[in-house]
Length: 81
Image (cartoon, rainbow, N blue to C red):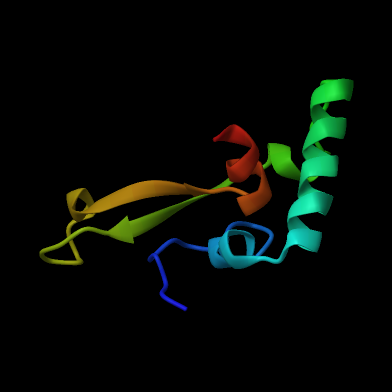
């Protein structure tokens, strides 16, 4: 399986799990997404993200050489696409 260089979210699940999951997993996720849309309410855990600094390039001691990225649950990212 080829990694697509994406970080795991707060749920610690790699995006490859969803990408290459079997039909049973996809059907469960479809049911979950439909419930979220019908109730117009997301799981509380999906409403939290964590911002971390990652090094871009150059000297690591300089603050401007970092950028913030938000880690979100991967299932939430799927729902947003």
